[in-house]
Image (cartoon, rainbow, N blue to C red; front, side, top):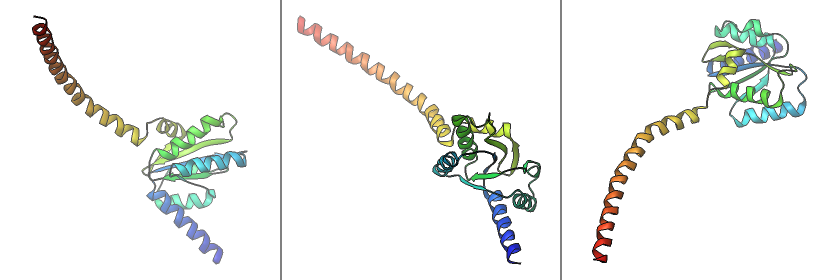
Length: 178
C-alpha cells in the first residue's frame, strides 16, 4: 500500500507540473555522459527550467488524468521531462544544447515531443519554437520600434536648430570681419 501511495503522489505531482507549466519538452537520452548531463542540467537550471527523468508509465497516467492527448505514443524508451513557466525556455535551452554538442546525429539526446500551454506539439514544432527570439528580445525590439519615430523627430528638430546656429555664427563672423 505504501508503494501505491508513493506512485499516486508521483502521478499527482507530474499531473500538477503538466497542467501548470506553459512550456514542456520530453527528451530521449541514450549514451549521454555524466559530464554532458550535468552541463545540461546546469544550463536548464540557469534558465529557470525544471528537468528530471520520469517513468513513462507514471507520465502516461498523469497525462491521462490531466486530459492531455497525444503524449502517450511518445512515451517509449528513456524519457526526461523539462518544464517551465516560460513557453519557449525549455525548447530553446535543450535545442541549443543538442546543436552545440552535436548530439542529435548520434541519437544521444533527442526531442521526443513538446507541449505549449496544454497543446501537444511534435519535435519539429519544438525546434521551430526554439528558434523564436526570447521574450526579452521581443520586448526590446518592440520598444526600439516605438522609440525610432521619436528619435527621428528629435533629430529633425535638432537639424533646424543647428542650421539656425550656423546662420547666426556666419552672420557674427561676417560682422566681425567688416
